[in-house]
Length: 189
Image (cartoon, rainbow, N blue to C red; front, side, top):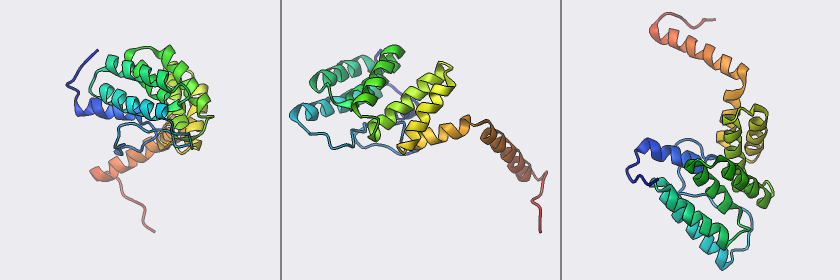
């Protein structure tokens, strides 16, 4: 599944997948967000983090098979490091293994105790999968959890899923469109 010629749009999509809690336009220098908690940084965890970065780079270059190989090594190296599971879940999803991705997201949430950046990312990704599987309630619950952890992307998605907000946005768009075309005027006091 190697494709070393990704468009900038494809790279942006991969950035959104691997870093869903980032506001649009933001980037992560290493290409991966690692755990924010006070995890003891053993040699194994350091090696797992290195493998994660390499795995994410491989996925971003279109080589999902290599990404999975590296992320599997990261999980084997530090099986209690939640970030490994979250990143592997994204690669599994790109590879078409939604069931495996869900298992890894559940493990990431469990290991992170539902706290921090990794949990935020895992809740967001799990919510997106649930939405694709038409589980709107499960999707909203996961997105609320991510939003409560500071996930701006999750907050934005929740707003767009609110039918009243969508209707207000549509009406506002129509009004602005009419103003721009000269069809309407703002009321003056």
